[in-house]
Image 1 (cartoon, rainbow, N blue to C red):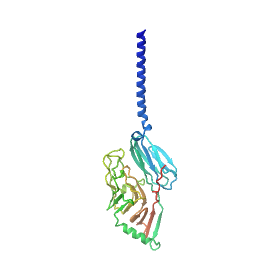
Image 2: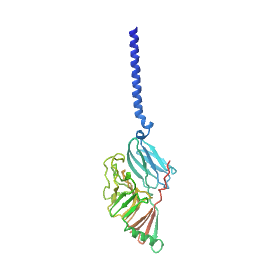
Image 3: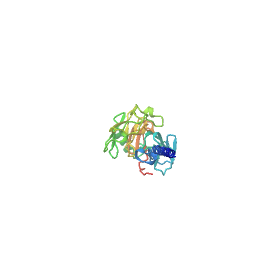
Image 4: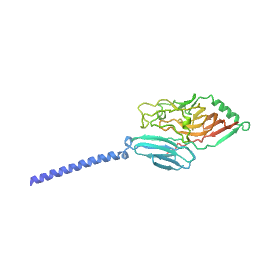
Length: 311
C-alpha cells in the first residue's frame, strides 16, 4: 500500500512539473510574440508619422503598400504603428503631384516624413514690357540671377552651389549632417510623374548599398550632389524655408527636388517651356520664355511651411 501511494505521489509530482514547464514555456512564447505591443523602445513596433504640407487640398491620401488611408484637411499629421518590414509610401492630394518614398523599418524605429506637394498647372502672371511698372525691376532681377551660382537657407544650415550642370549641397549647421545627406538607402531613380525625368537627368546622382533604414555607424557626409543635369542650371534656391527641398531651373523647365537619403528622389514639375533666363526669389519665380517674346512670366508658389502642429 505504501509503495502504491509513493508511486502515485511521484506520478503526480511529475505531472505537476510538466504543467509548470508548459506554463513557463508558453508564457515565454506569448511574451516574445506580443512584447512589441507590451513594451516601448527597441521592442515596440515601428511608427510612421507624416507631417502634411499646409496646402488647400480637400483630402490627403496616404498609401502604405496596399493599405490606403484618407485624411481630411483638418488633419495635420498622420501617425501609424506598423509591423516591421519594407514600405512603399505615397502621399497625394487632388490636383497636386504625388510624393513617394520607400522605407525599411525595424522594431523600435520612429520615422517622421515631411513630403512636399507641388500644385499642378500653377497660375502665372504675365508682365509686359513698356506696360507693367514692375517689368524693369523684375528684368534686372533675372539679369542678376544669371551671375548667381549659390544659395543658402534662411537659417544658414544648408548651402547649395550650382556652377554649371550640377547642384551640390553642403551642410553648415551645428553638429553632424542630417540623414538627408547620407547616400540613398534603397535602390531607385529620380522620378517626377510627368515623364520628363529622362530628358532632364544626366546620370544617377547616388547609389545604394543596402535596403535598411537610414542609420549608419558612420556620420553622413557634409556635402552631397543633389542632381546632375544634361543642360546648364539657370538658377536654384530653397523652397518654403526648407533645407531639404530645392527649386531649380534648366532650359526645359523648372522643378522642385528633394535632398534625401530615401529613394526614389522626388522631382515635381513647376513649369515647362523653353526658358531663356530666370530668377528665384523665395517662393517667387520669374522667367523669360523664348516662346513668349517681350514678357516675363511670374509664378508664386504657395507658402506651405506654416503647418507645424501635431495631431
